[in-house]
Image (cartoon, rainbow, N blue to C red; front, side, top):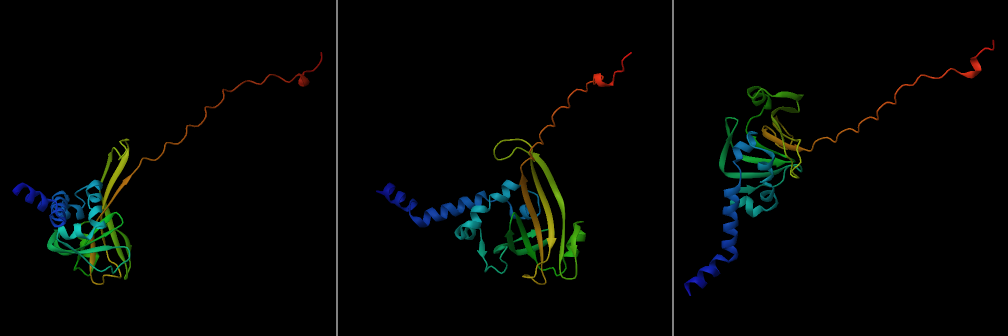
Length: 201
């Protein structure tokens, strides 16, 4: 009887959701390390199920925020993270990147601290970055020669005035196809003298 009751409890939707949330939390890579470019592309991809399921985000202690920027998915964290020497409880995912939203009006301050290279520097827009890592490894299909890169970025955006978006963009690129070999040149031949050019004796 007790065994049956325990099995019924374990199989209930609430317990299954809690167990799923615990598994998600246990499997989630370190967020601070991810934002600071100290992890890899596979760690970034481990968060994709969380972005697709708000309940998984809640299980991690993330509260989904209204989408103020069409290119970003934002969360408020129950426990702030420390990244690049600053604390933030606001993160965002965009494309293959994750950033912390910092209460720092000028991204140039962080760009100088991290020795980032300026890509855009105007009164309205700042974008700076540098490659933190580039590694050659085997790809998802097992083939060699894939290149994994991690790029630290600091920028601003109109949807978040007075704030700096600082984080990491990850990519995994397949090797470029080998160029076809050029056909071997035909061996040079010496042309025979033209009979028409011979002069009779």
